[in-house]
Image 1 (tube, rainbow, N blue to C red):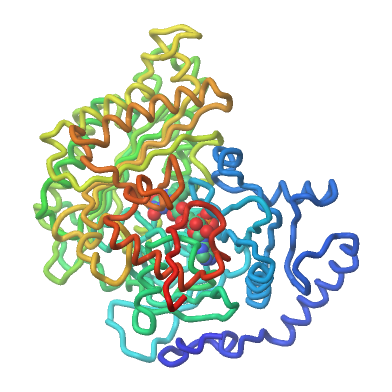
Image 2 (cartoon, helix red, strand yellow; image 1 turned 90 degrees about the vertical axis):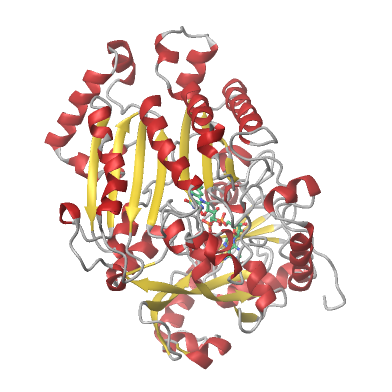
Length: 614
Ligand SMILES: Cc1cc2nc3c(=O)[nH]c(=O)nc-3n(C[C@H](O)[C@H](O)[C@H](O)COP(=O)(O)OP(=O)(O)OC[C@H]3O[C@@H](n4cnc5c(N)ncnc54)[C@H](O)[C@@H]3O)c2cc1C
């Protein structure tokens, strides 16, 4: 099953033959027999399919099942307007089921939407009409450190990872092996989509994207054949899959990822405060525009300075009231610590507001700051300590608002887990999303910090609640909308995000200095949706355009898509790809990889261009 990989890697026996052990196969067969008997009444769509099949238009009981499994992150917000109701949802047990699905879809001229973790914000891992969804959330959970036959750098290791692994499980596995690699912050995102959309996260400056570390892509192609795609054997397809058009080239089952040995990234000399590094600060403040301004000024200064050394990473998040904060800050689970924090909150907020909060946590600002030694010469010296001092100093400036400043001194296999956001979704509400990116290096001078703080404050400031009455717009927006904000620095000449730009992948906008996520969740209903939409429409005017303090150009990221999702429209694809040449190159590769449109299940796909090859 892994012909190319076998040439240079030592692959575990079970992958070499493509057959599972007798015990395993007979186990599945017997389970299947039981199911077959009990499911005689169920319509069969794909013959001899071992896994489950759920129909949109089945019996009432089948419809119940279908509704249960037809849930993903975007269902709350896009199910209607992007029609996320496939005719059939299939859950393969193994490769053979995936191949059968591809062959069946091709022969029946329907398309397949591919879902691993179901976190695509526009609902692009779903589809509609007669098309089907292949749900891989439980199919490929393999994890194995491979014994590389060809020498690799001493500080690296190769890991074979199935697409159905969630980041939290991948992280736990790497930690167990004292390994690490960069990836995004959401614990429940799956590796399957994440590899194709990049994997933007806390280690972005110091180590680049998750996708920068993928060496081989194992995928089921349009003809049902399994291929191991690497830069060496198919540079074009490798390039297109990693960053080009997620879900539209084939069904990926596994990646081989080159990860880092944590022991190779520890400081050797004890510096100020007794720290050697890797070092981190995880800070928590009650929301206040002054604190936010101070932290975002640090982001702007870092982004504007091209010479910041590689090892620094910085991310600032803001979360509305009601967020279960202890999952981000486990020390707060300690009863004494919790009481101390609650007393601080009581001292900082007005009684009327505290009554309204009724025990839930107020809006918060969260800081993730990290320094990792990335070369032998990197030392935790005065300059590194000064950088952390900027954040420590906020304790003195903002006594009332500062809740926690946790210092972290641990190896990267542990540290990288500190930045994971261990929650399925930020708020159990529909959302209007925005992810803006920029290559600006004059954010501070251009006044972006004030602009973004003012926009955020329009929703976050408790004064909107205190100074208004039910029915007033500000009051209603405050009470019925919640924000999840995440702003991270990626820029600089030394940033690996930037330096990796010519590594054979196609992730766009590699000169990005800052990515800002401004997601507005709202209570269901047109009225509240309208508040959120209006807030975002105004943000668009401020964050993008010739006179914007943030970005002169509309630069969107496939992982954070929003608005019109038709990548066939020039106005839209121009936001996701640097130029027409790149878009057309991807289109030609799409034409070859997907000649029958089997993997074109919705408009969030680069238009395929037919060539003589395809
Ligand atoms: C709450 C939340 C937080 C997030 N935080 C971050 C973050 O910090 N950094 C970041 O970079 N991203 C982040 N994302 C975005 C996320 O990483 C991307 O949407 C990613 O592509 C999701 O992968 P998935 O497999 O979970 O989702 P899916 O919706 O299943 O897949 C996403 C896309 O990849 C395709 N795809 C999935 N699996 C396969 C496969 N096996 N073969 C072929 N195509 C496939 C799908 O068709 C779809 O187009 C976040 C998303 C959410 C909802």
